[in-house]
Length: 315
Ligand SMILES: NC(=O)c1ccc[n+]([C@@H]2O[C@H](COP(=O)([O-])OP(=O)(O)OC[C@H]3O[C@@H](n4cnc5c(N)ncnc54)[C@H](O)[C@@H]3O)[C@@H](O)[C@H]2O)c1
Image (cartoon, rainbow, N blue to C red; front, side, top):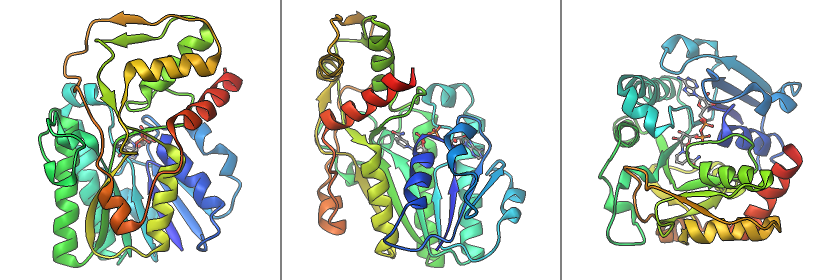
């Protein structure tokens, strides 16, 4: 099978690359990565650059020309490339429009013209905004609170229209907070990475607000397993799934867990709440379980231990 990973040099993309390279449940003949390295890093994919199945193209998905570097016959596109930073999306909504919306349209146009079998589009829990009824079901969409969230809703909308109109198979994954052994701060896993970095330095983790706000953290390997299942099952049609664990954890609990794993004696420091932070977010994953038979396998504690151990060696 032949793959295109847009944004493959980023956090999730580089883990998917690693996963695909060692995949055994289906043959992987070719993997193209298109990434402009705006937030991704070449170091993330460096270990696999020598694999002749991998071709890295440094380019921008908002420019159609980049797609002409690809050979025909792609089976699957995993479209991760995006401006993911919510603050940046407020500062430069035009750029977000160009990359996240026009870029997604370029991917869909390419897929339609070249008859690509499956497109996997990672959307985001941000499409829900602040929801009063928990856990959050797929049908509670949409209440965007940022240009980033608007761009994901638009991307989903185009995926649906292309599926309805041209018969493309598209699966939308509304990712909650994905975390894992990754040394750089990212928009979503940021809180875990920041806590660990500070604890490793022996300084207190900082919580903004009361710490009673909750999030749903899913381990990166579970996301890779889900993507591999979708490819293996040859997903058909169009559908949208929440991707989380279904378990809410407060930021206070999270900080205590990381401190306990570290074995260090550090306190927690509290700062002012950050404007725009939603209070609670937890996924209802019953659709994921029922329709795809998928359940995350890594509990938060085990995922945090993996992440902590990796970061301890890295720094
Ligand atoms: N990490 C999460 O918890 C999470 C949650 C919800 C949704 N998502 C979505 O998953 C996807 C991957 O996120 P991530 O956490 O790996 O972020 P990331 O920033 O690590 O990866 C994004 C990648 O896209 C690349 N990119 C950005 N603009 C580009 C452009 N114009 N052309 C080509 N490449 C470009 C970046 O260089 C980077 O490698 C994004 O679409 C994001 O919205 C992630």
